Length: 461
Ligand code: PXG
Image 1: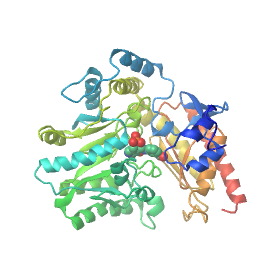
Image 2 (image 1 turned 30 degrees about the horizontal axis):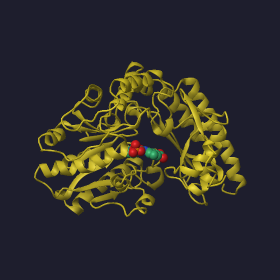
Image 3 (image 1 turned 135 degrees about the vertical axis):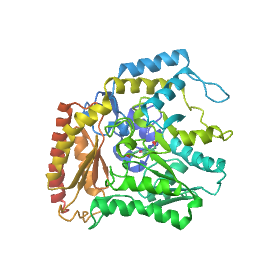
Image 4 (image 1 turned 90 degrees about the vertical axis):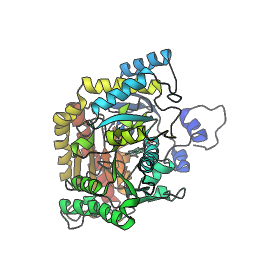
């Protein structure tokens, strides 16, 4: 693969190497082997240009909840594009798809959440969050409340504010981040950092880091705490049960806004419409994207609690907005997707049918000699790879080496499963059938065997 192919050569891989820059990718390394070309999708499967059929255990990038190939979404978008392909929602204008979607979201979200500000994705949503919470406190006469507390190893997007909120240090290193007034506390990652504490003790300890941070910086300076109810990109990390109630207590006690980033966990992924309901928290803001349109078109949003909306609505002009805020075609896609989710009762299907069915089998993978912990909530799961089950020890080789081996075996055996370091994660489409769940487990099991043998041969076990 050359990095400078002749201009007339238009094979997808060659064009890709010549002209396309991928997100989060070592371009030189990728160009040497060529990108995998995905050509179509149907249900829970995608195909590549070599004819390989892959069970998409990641639902695209956590988004393809209703499955590929839904004609009714394409039809709804097509009809909307013919009627009104674009109009903005600035300058005191609106249109029917955006109002219908906003009303639908008010219906589906927790009772105290009734307004949505639309964006084109999760990063824009979280950028909006930063401006919105600071504006909220200014409008309340507390302009010093600016600091947003987030967590190490959180993922909140790639824009300057999103990456600053995020706790990925390798992202901070590129671009002088975080921006001012964003601080990070430790994550509630019991498997990796819990030591000898029970999960419950550890969850409380980590939640109380928020209180310690508030006391250190001063309650009068802290605007909000933001977190994913279950960390996604960080490695599918559901917190211990003690965590969220304690966080809620602290936010209430110190008058700190609670922001739930539900970009991954929203719309049925955990068996509820929103994970905030599952964990019984009452967020002031919920960031959404991904499954909202199942990735058919890019759309995200920031949903506001009534107490927040009241201040924003009465606080004069909020100087913020995107050309594509409430784009009619993306709203039409989201409405069609939500219609499918409601009609097929997908959150309930995850909670009471495919969820328990799949979870039982996923947890059983924890018996494999390579697995230190198997965990899952709804349809988002993780497998921790380890050379020593009893101590949860990491491998004596660069972190991610064995995880990457495992991911390659997945791709070569018809399964898309992602690795985060040496943690394998899945988030399959919510429409997964029992037979497809069996297939996923069978493939994952085979891949673990292959990884075990290869890791042993390489001397990592
Ligand atoms: N918040 C959360 C919780 C996310 O997971 C974003 C915000 C940003 O959304 P946009 O739409 O701007 O990408 C995300 C995105 C991965 C991976 O490798 C995860 C995401 C994006 C890209 C890669 O797991 N999550």
